[in-house]
Length: 83
Image 1 (cartoon, rainbow, N blue to C red):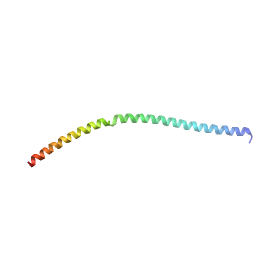
Image 2: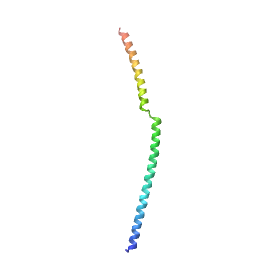
Image 3: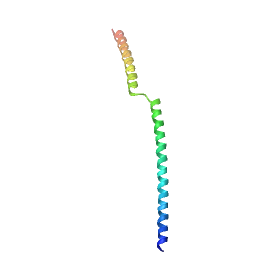
Image 4: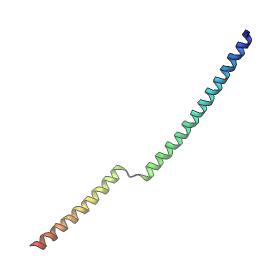
């Protein structure tokens, strides 16, 4: 093979590698875009469907106050029944 054939072979290999690298870079770019959209959707879902920690604490405090009142009433009834 003469020098022109080697040059053609090198150019063809470089073109093939560049094409492959370009395709791979495009696939990664598209995947990042999809991940950004998914993350945005997940953030909206979490904000809409999940209970905030402070809201949960307020709710659990209210439930425990009610349970304490029920317990106090039951204790009062138990004292009256045995007395």
